[in-house]
Amino acid sequence: MHSDGAADGVAEDGAAEDSAAQDSAAQNSAAEGVLERALGVLQCFSDDEPALSAAVIAERTGLATSTLHRLLARLTTLGLLARAPGHRYTIGVRLWELGELSPLSLRLRETALPFMLRLYEATAENVHLAVLDAPTPERATALYVGRVTGQSSIPTLSRMGGRHPLHTTGVGKALLATRDEDWLAHYFSTPLERETTHSITTEEVLRAELAVARRRGYATTREEMTLGNVSVAAALGKVAGLPPAAIGMVVRLERADERRLAALVTQSAADLTRILRETDPTE
Image 1 (cartoon, rainbow, N blue to C red):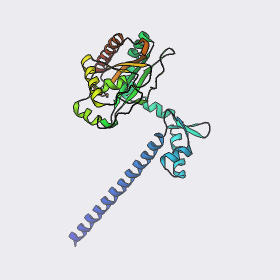
Image 2: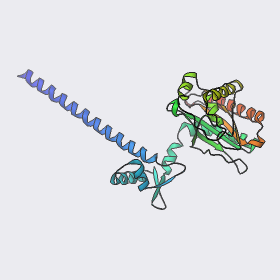
Image 3: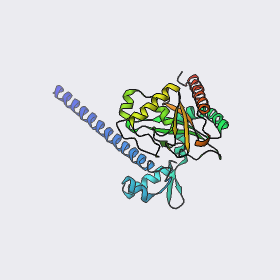
Image 4: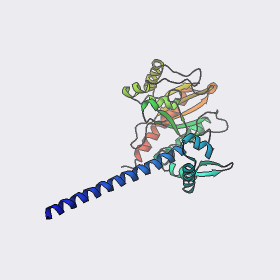
């Protein structure tokens, strides 16, 4: 009898553990569902549409009206969204504050800023800092994490937090030149889109340009992203804890002195790499 009771107790304990595991899995699944819905809402916003109505967000996310309104209210209370005129929503201050805690801001951009200002003072033109954002090589882009510009600088499409193709930007080509053959093989498996009539969209020609960039230590573009612009950029060396990065300048075609610009950006890239390695927070 005692053995039967013990067996029953073990069975009951096992059933309880199974039930607890199922409850935990259900809770985790529900939490993941909420996070995915919240992220879906946040990803509706863009530089072209920084303020959106609930109706537009509902259309883009496919969420039920009642679910969406509860989610919008919660995100607003947490500061991840903010209310804007016209019954619209924008990205909230708290989300910006959290983003500024990223190593891309705290470590890379803050360290790079004096070097970027120095380049701007020497040229009065746009200075860009970008990193390789590559969930996969096929989806890789140049993510802009720093930018210095002025009233006399030629207009560009870039902005901090924005992204552009690798093959049509100076910083993008500099980043591509750091990739190995296996990575590039996957990258070239998808078509290269043309941004202007001067964009390079064939693998053979772009590979030749990357070979030149590796040999001389910097990459260039001529009207490949925006007409009238020339870009010169150099990749930073590998830095622990940071993605591949590049620094570059975009100047007017008619006053582009490639040799002078190349000397400035390559020196800045080398100096910035050295400072970042010396201040590695993991050591």
